[in-house]
Each structure stands twice: as structure tokens, then as C-alpha cells.
Length: 301
Image (cartoon, rainbow, N blue to C red; front, top):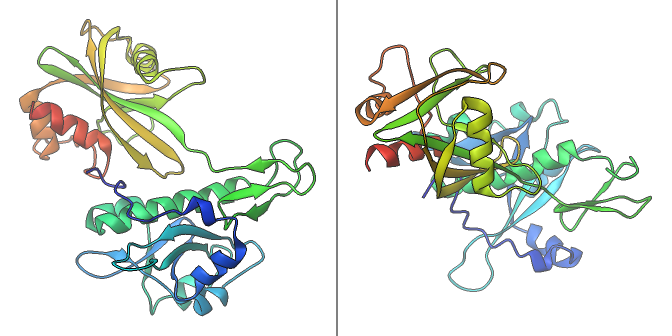
């Protein structure tokens, strides 16, 4: 199971519009605060999501604060406890006031030491809060929108348009040619960092077509067979990374200099050494990212 996957919550989409039911779920709920995109964590050496009592986060509420129902926890008998995300970004003293409960930390850099199920839940929480922060106005008429259905949609009070959270599908692929694979460095990455090529899908495009287009555009590679591997939510801010293997028809490269600074064909032994941090001056993808699993899967055959 990849990091950021395996969310155990029952999202109960059928109940989100029932305000009385949602209000009942707030009693004794697990509230997960977010501040400036960071999540509240506690514990050592393994981190977990820090829950804060409702009355505490309510005291931090501002006019822009958003509460989002995420779902119900699993329960042996009956209905599980409600879990909510709450944005306290606009309260400048939130980090200090919530210190008794935990510390706000970056989700991506904390992912390797965070409990797997909490990582998946916080991925959902961060994705929802990020969506609210970027979609405060109606895309149809420009009017300020309002939250609805327990924070899982926004509604325009003027034209009535309903706006729902969106996930942007992106392909990430490991191109192979015989016993070698292609790793590249984006122009915006650190000089030592190499990973798989990736790009967002375009309207009217299949996964296979997007893989072939991105490899052609960024590296000049013509691709044959494309094989799906796995997918991973990536809430930075709202992507779904669709991992694939792609068989190149040639090892000749023609890089797009506006996107790719360098690209190198790696043997299996070289790729293994990169994953293990044994190539001086170079590092591969972090283990929280699907790129690591694509590369590791290829290395292990």
C-alpha cells in the first residue's frame, strides 16, 4: 500500500447535507486543525494526527474559518466517531495556543514518520482545506461562494452554481529501454535530484495517451507499450498521481530545455544504488512518493 492511500474513514456522502446529523457527529468528534497548509501532529518517534476538542478550535474560529466533515471512524459496534478538518490559518496565535496538543508540521516531510492511516486521513483533510482556500469565488459569475454539505461543496448565492472539490489527474512514468530506465531532473529541482518524468493529463486524453505525450514532449521519446502500476493521492495541492511503466522504442533523447535540465539512462544496479543513496552527488525520489515505488518495482523486476 502506497503512502497517502488506505483511508479508513466512512465518508458518508449520503449524510453530508443533513445539518442535524452533522451537528450530532460534532459531539465528541475528532477535530484535526490545519494552519497555513500544515497539519497538527504529536508523538515520537512515530507521529500521529493530533485531535483537538471542539470547544478549543471553536475559540480559534475566524470569519474565514472552514470546517469540513471527513467521515466516520471505524467502530466495532454502532456508528463510529466523526472526524472533521478545521482551518485555523487566519488565527495568528493558533500554533502557540495549540501547543498543548501538538506541533504544526509539513505533511510531505513528515510522511515517513507518520502513522499510515493518519497520513491518508490528513491527505484528505489537507486536500479539502486547500480546495476551499483556492475556490472562494464562483467561477461562473465571480460572486463569493458559501460552504454547504458539511464543507464538501461551495454554492454561489447569486447564480446558484454548485462547486465541488476537484482532483487533477497526473501521469508519472518510468520509461524503460531494455535493461535501463530513464530518470530526469526538472529545471526547478535541486541539482542532485533525479526522478521519474511526470505531467498533468489534458482534456479528452487517456492515461496511455498522456504518458506518451509527456515522454515525447519532455524527452523526445517515442513510446510503445504502456502499463499501469498504481495511483497515489498527492494533496500538494490536489493531484492524483497515476503511475505507469512505458517501453521506449529508442534511447535517443531530445530534452525540452524549458522543462528538463538533464536526463540519464540508469541500469538496474545504478537505479538500486540511487535508491539506497549510494551515488555520490545524486539522490532519487523520497520514499513517500509513488516515483520511489515505480523505480523500486522495476529494480526488483
